[in-house]
Length: 387
Ligand code: SF4
Image 1 (tube, rainbow, N blue to C red):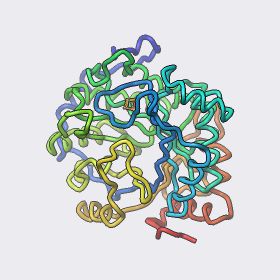
Image 2: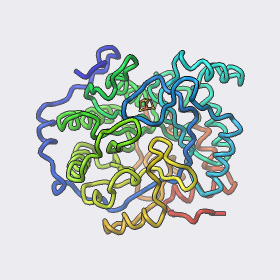
Image 3: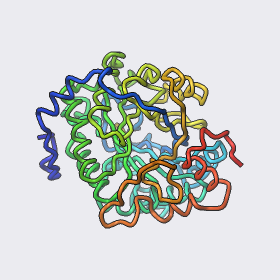
């Protein structure tokens, strides 16, 4: 089974015949989407501290150099994003900073927070106050951490990356596929609309890609919570010389993702890293979160396309471009779900996928509530200022 899966009791069995079928999929075998969607976001890199040291990653900073945004900085960044017409505050950090990051822990304590996750909760509240919907990517979480953080998030995410045990994750502090699968399962058990994905080109093989996609499908079939799967290619950077996978590879793996996943689960490529226009006919239907106001802090050398460039991608595929919220329509409450979108049945033990604080934010009578409802209805892409 996958490395680390036993430790977490993750029981995801992969059917060998399904792997073989997926390995035979080519771009001509999949249906092309009838639209492309995207979300407008502001990146909020809460901290650049991370307990891991993945070899392809330029995001993390070592202890002593890592940054931590103050509550005031979080508020300012959210305010700028809301003013620029964003709907999503994308909170990123790597994974919970370990004991080496003494300064980060001391600062959090001075500010009255027990952990980075406590602080993330407050940061999400600030985003809601400023008119944005939080979407947090805080690395691996337990079920009880999801139970807390779901109260202030519209959706959340973590990249599976791969079920393979690759050297790129090597080192004394090594993240494992079992941990990531455990996180995706925990999100499902807590009824959190969830984004995950695979990273292509970090030393995994074709069979690993097929198994990774089938593992995501297996967990989605249990909990119904996976809203989108990102197919992201690695890119060369100052810490890594992994080559960017070629177009033929990306076309095949995107088609595999489309074939592996139920139609309701979106397949996304990041348009600043991938040749998106050449992947529309392989089954992508989403371009992810793009920001009019902040860099891609995970891949700072790769600029976001602007709205015109996104429209050019959609035009190249002969499909319309539509703006969406960070939470996909099928998880939204009846009153704002787009017409014709089938709701996903509520998660076990929960009244709704979206928590009250987020529903109230969307329902508010202010300019932000109006913008969020317009995007939810499918009236976008909106002009930058919708007031
Ligand atoms: S890829 Fe994520 S988990 Fe790995 S070092 Fe970078 S921030 Fe940390």
